[in-house]
Length: 553
Ligand code: GAP
Image (cartoon, rainbow, N blue to C red):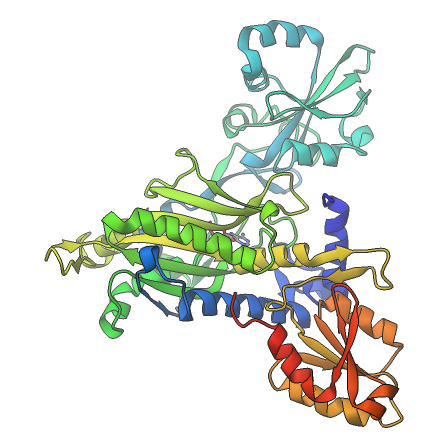
C-alpha cells in the first residue's frame, strides 16, 4: 500500500506520543530545524550508530576479491581551525542562493520557488508548436505569475494550493484536477479567469535566473504582493561563532558542517600512530551543523544532525573498484536492517550534479512518505585526491605533503578517497517510517515493526496480575534480561494495554507470567509482528532473546 502524507502525520504524532522525537525547546514554541530525541528515540539512534560502528569499523566485510583492510575511528572536535574550512572549500563555496521578503522578513531558497500561471489557449498554441516541450521554460522565464509558492517540487506546490485557492489565486476557478504534463515538470488544471475566459492553471518551478531578473515584479509567496522580494543572494550555510573573549574577524570560527574534514586533518596523525597501511579507512560519528534555509520534512533536513562518515584511502588505480565495493556494501547494509529494497535505490549522480573534485557519486535514496521521489539517505562519493591535496597545500604549502610511499613501485602518491557519508537522523527517520504499521484488525492497530537489532526496547516482562506470587516470578526474569538487553517491566493496566504500549515502542518480545507459570514453570512469549504466543520454560527467557537478536547483519 502506498504511503501518504496522512501516514507522515500519524508517524510524527506517534513519535511525539511515545517519546521518539520531540521539537527542540518545545515549551518555548520550538526552534526551526532542531529536534530532541526522547527515551525511545535515543535508544533507536544509539542502536543505529552501534550497528554502523560494529559492521563498518570493528567488523567490516572483506574488500574486493577478499582483500583485507583496516578500519579505525576518530572523534574530532566540532570547532576546528577555520583554515580547515578554507582548504575544504566551505568558506568560499558552501552556500545556497536565497531570497528575502523585505516586508514580511521571511526568507526562502531561490531554487525552491514554484509559480502559478494562467495560460490561455493562444499562449499554448503558438509557443508549443514553435518550442515543443521546452516552451514553458521560454514562456515562464518572461511572464509574471499570478502567485508563487515555496515548495521543493511542483507537486508539493499543488498540494499546498489545493484547498487554499480562494486565498492564493483569487478570481481564478479551477475546473478539474491537476495533472502532470508531458514535460514532467508542470502540473496543469483546466480553469477560468475572472472574466470567464477558459484556460489552464500551470504550476511550474521558477528558475534562480528568472528570479534574478524578475524578483521585483514576481508576487511574494508570503504576501502575494510584488515588489518586496530581493534578488537571490548567496548565503553560507556554516554557523559562525567566535573563539575567545574578543569578537572580531580574527576570532571567527565555524561549527563543522560535516565530520569528514576532521578525518582528513588527522590523516597523518592516524598513519603515524596506528599501524594502518593503504588501503584503510577512518570513520567518525558526530554532530554536524548547517544553517539550512528551509529545514523541512520533520528531521529530514535539520540544522543540527549527526553523520556517520568513512574516508577510505586507497591507491588511485584501485579507487574505482573500492568505489563500487563501498556503494554495494552500504546499499546492502540498509537492506540488512529491514529497509525494503523496493523503497531503496542507488542513484548515480549525473555529470552536472557532481562536485568539481568528484569523479563519481552514488546517492543511496529512500522513498519517504512525504515525497514523490526517493530522497538521499547517504552519498557514496569518489573524491579523488582533492581533500588531502588541499590540506597539503593550505597547511604545509605543497599539495603532495600528505603523499605516501607505494612499497611496490617506490613512488610517492597522494591517496584517493572513497567517502560513504550517511546521516544518522535520516536513517532513523527511514527506520521509523519503514517500521510504522497500521493494521486495523489488531487490538493495537498502530505498531512499529523494527528490525530486532534496532528496536529501542528488546523485551518486556509482565506479571499478568500484580499479586498471587506472579511479580515474585517475573522480577528475576526481568533483572536477568535487563543485564544484557534494554528491557521493561510493567505490572499495571490490562494485559491488552500493556501489549499495545510495547507494540507502539516496537518491542519484539513480551514475556507474560500467569497462573500456569506457578503450575508448570512456563511463561508466554508474544511476538510483536503477528501477536502469536508460545509457551517456554521460565528459565529460557534470556536465552530466547539472545537467540532471536542477531548482533550483526
Ligand atoms: N562529507 C560529505 C557530506 O557531508 P552531504 O551529502 O552533504 O555530504 C551527507 O551529507 C549526509 O548527511 C546526507 O546524505 C544526509 O544523510 C546527511 N545530511 C546532510 N544534510 C543534512 C540535514 N540538513 N539534515 C539531516 N541530515 C543531513
